[in-house]
Image 1 (spheres, rainbow, N blue to C red):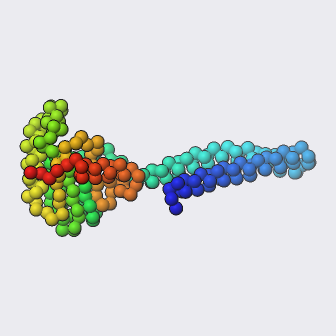
Image 2: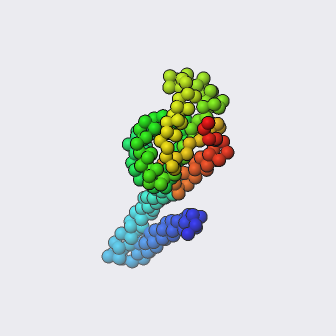
Length: 228
């Protein structure tokens, strides 16, 4: 079933649920009022109970609506493919658990990947032996973007950024991995990107991952080059 059909089906089910609750309690209320004014005890007592049940049932409609909204929110989150939200992207244990499960493809777009190399240089050969395609996009050290980054941030770790990127590129290349490719990008990236064949902030088949995946592919094919 197509996503639009799923949404329509959910809306129809919600409408039928709300209407059935409303109608059922309306009938109970109508019968109860009739019994109160037309009959004698004990049917009048039954009518009073039906009226009370009908009124309480209408209040329960609000509870059902709140619960349904919560379920709908959970369904929408599931449709995006998001699995979890992490407070600290520098926690290497998060990356490690997904790298261990990576089976087909690993794409990363970042500035220099120095920390990544330090943390996972021993994992990359394992992925390569597994046949995982590894594509790394690193900032072009000879681009105006690299020069601007050094000047604008004035941070100690940005000093000599061009030389650091060239050195880091050489270290990746020294691994001599069959399935590893490194390219330098010269555009201004709009995202930090880390994707493997299982997850990217969630499932790669989820809607949240689509613009990031498209951005990576565009930068890789149109705004990057092989290192010298």
